[in-house]
Image (cartoon, rainbow, N blue to C red; front, side):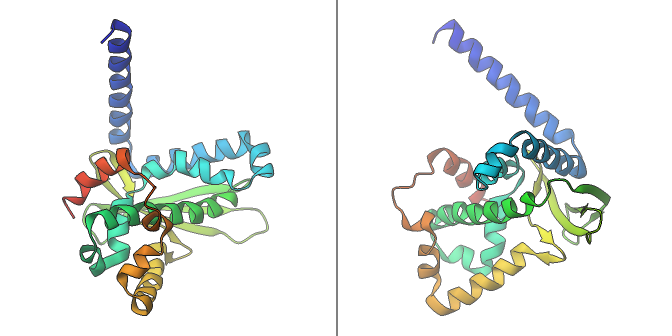
Length: 219
């Protein structure tokens, strides 16, 4: 290993450590505030890209929002009792499939953030231990307020969102009901196979799956 390579690895490790320390010292509201503001800034600077390609918002969400979501826990919760009825490889592909589904949904929400006023109400504890709810209100003169709640849980890498409650409707509960209905109709394996991420065997998850595999051991 050359000296330059060693120096690069040291600098990379220090940057990663600094990022993790910063995430761990932030409050739940600060985490949501910062990630939301980063998206708003990108909506402004990348306005031309978004006008020519509205789907570009998914790229922004993937880059700035996804790291703050606990998709392993969310996937476990949305499948409920069926989680342990599928193989680990199916769990992994479902996590990626459900993540992509939520990215598209959340991207649609963020497209409506531009030129809006965003306020925050006091964070409240949730019924589940270790979980708090960050409340966000989105308003625009002449329009009714729009409410979003972020149930977040503190972990090894800071606060992570484990659900998204839009106008009082939990996305997890909504999808859980929809998924359960489909599972009843077509069966669990057929339902899972219906996700492109579980159907296309050419899709690889090597780097991310290493992290997911570790978390799955605890579920």
